[in-house]
Image 1 (cartoon, rainbow, N blue to C red):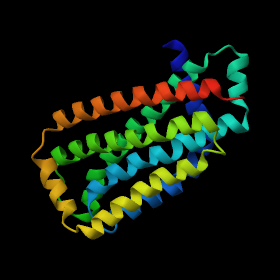
Image 2 (cartoon, rainbow, N blue to C red):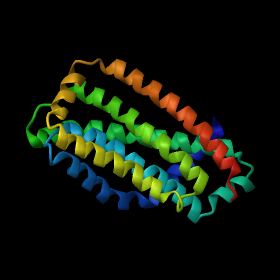
Image 3 (cartoon, one colour):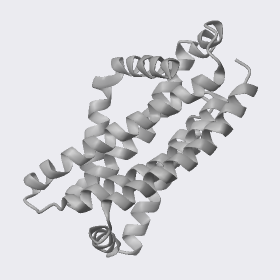
Image 4 (cartoon, rainbow, N blue to C red):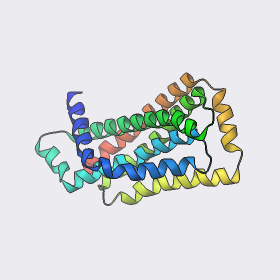
Length: 220
């Protein structure tokens, strides 16, 4: 656990130089999510999706630019611990960004002068974490197998296809958003949170096992 904690610290420090550069795209994504629907709830999944964008691209990009994979080997860090550490960092970013969306939602509601249900917001946060966690589970093995440059197509395609699918679904079923909010309002946030944790645990475990196998075979 101590090695994983140190690895998370290293990962987070490697993101620090990009913090300012990430502010503008983050604002664009959040505003673009809220404006069409004028719903403060849109802040929550939009913030969570940002984890899919920054976690693999920037973290694995730093590995490639600094040849950190070779450094980990030279330092005697087993590849399975590198995988565990990177998955832990990605999960931490997902939780943190989902929490940011949850905090911004009531502030957005004040700006838009609309009401916000904390029950719906909490349920949506749990659902968003589960869905975005599933996307990360798809992306991360590809990055461990191929590296940042070669896996970049996967990194762009997974969130892009997901966003397009949501937009098309909203266009084809214009009442889907209201139906979803109504369903969330009648659903226990605690039950959804437990379900989200179960999904993340199952998919994360399977994904990390695959990533460990692929990373072990990769020629650094």
